[in-house]
Image: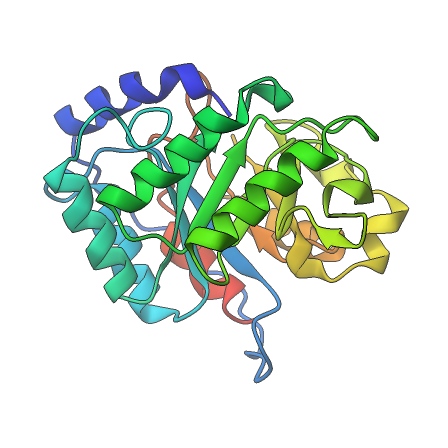
Amino acid sequence: MLRALVLTSILLSSSFAQVATPAGPATLRTPTLAAPELRVLVPAYFYPVTNSPWTRLSAVAALHPKRIAAIGNVFNGPGAAFDASYSAAFADFRAQGGTLLGYVYTSYGARPLAQVFADVDQWLAWYPLDGFFLDEMANTPGQFESYYQAIYQYARSKVAHALVVDNPGASTSPSYLHWNNKTVASAVCIYEGSTGFSTWHSDAWVKTRPRQEFYALPYATPSSGWQAAVDHAFTENCGWVYVTDDVLPNPWDTLPAYFEALAAYVATF
């Protein structure tokens, strides 16, 4: 997920504070009274300056308890040093009811486990977290299940009930969720892209699993299309979603103007 561009986005975000603009009204559903069936997971790759998107994230998390999660990314992971600004933003987000994951890249199974574990440890030494987002996940059946299972187990040994979301960004095998009768990931991202989402369909096996195991991540979506994108993610059995109008080279360095409306709509599922 654009690992090499994180520093650029941080520098740009620290120079230009984001100002929300009104978005068109959503056609709201009647809120469910059961446990949340759909939640928002935001790749929050922006630096927490005054009035940064982190301020909006925390405000929205307060409005929609247990519905909003974010992926913190200092610099392709926890960074080289503790950052007080990130610490304050992360703490506020969690205090407002948000779920915070720390970004860790895996190089499609090529990164040594010792380095991955070191990132997990460093995140927790500096910032309290609720789980981890493992980027660049392999998805070839029968090759790296034990690798990702080891990371999941290590994360759970450090954070009880840690949420571990893995990102192949494409179709994957059920063995990357469960392998040898043990969990490999809490959830996997099965779509990440800017085109074709309206006609994309999840694999048949996905429909047989709990929706909280699947995440869709369409970007470059205009304000006229975000609600249809949320509906489509839900139809394809995704229990996690994020939609943005941001584009390449880094679609995760801002929040869309329609973010508040999107969160309110997701909260009705």
